[in-house]
Image (cartoon, rainbow, N blue to C red):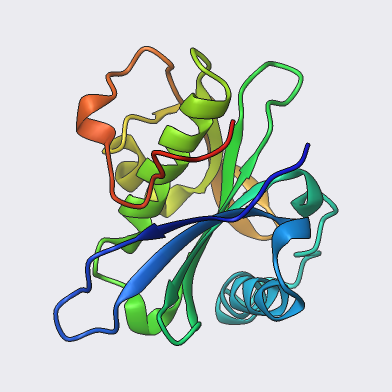
Length: 183
């Protein structure tokens, strides 16, 4: 599939540099952006969470990536959207926010944009994710419901969650989602 960069302008957060959201396939990202993406994810999921695992898992080339960057090009948050798996549900993952940018609602915006992107590309399908168990309430607030028991993944408790396709769309709109995103 040929995907192109789809920029989306966002309003500045008070006291912070202006942010821009970008949906792109891995092949469409510059080497510098790919480096920033993998570095942010490794810094959070491997280093900060003290969880040595294979961050580069071979699935990024098939994914849509949402990057939130400052006007200066600093990556502050990201999300990965994988195409539907065998049971037909696209999957959100690798949702990460740089420590200095936490507490501003960026993760919620990323997830809402990911849901909207999944709906645009694969209409009428649920959206899945594997949540760290301590974030279950956060994802429940975005319409996700547990579909598994808590399990250990790389030493961190996780739970599989699914957002049913029939949950309404109007309240899910978020400025990080693109009206012009290619399907």
